[in-house]
Image 1 (cartoon, helix red, strand yellow):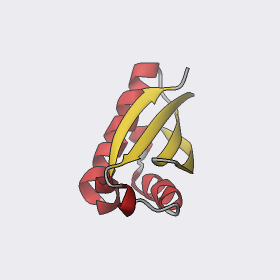
Image 2 (cartoon, rainbow, N blue to C red):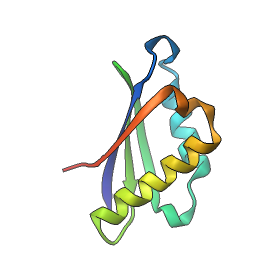
Image 3 (cartoon, helix red, strand yellow):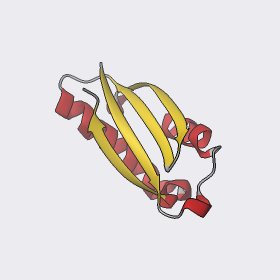
Length: 93
């Protein structure tokens, strides 16, 4: 299992809400499919947006990051909430 960090930085601070962490958690879970390999999520409000740890089941680290990116892309296309944020993904060391 790999931990992929998803940092969601608010594009406009006035649009971000502390409750967005809960919404992001629920939305990612709702859109995840078995091919994404998402095991579970930890999301919390951060000073500039939302910090998320995605626990990904994958054969390699690069596959985990690619699957996390695919999930974020699906959600970004379908859910307006993520348009408030700029997303950055990287593997947790």
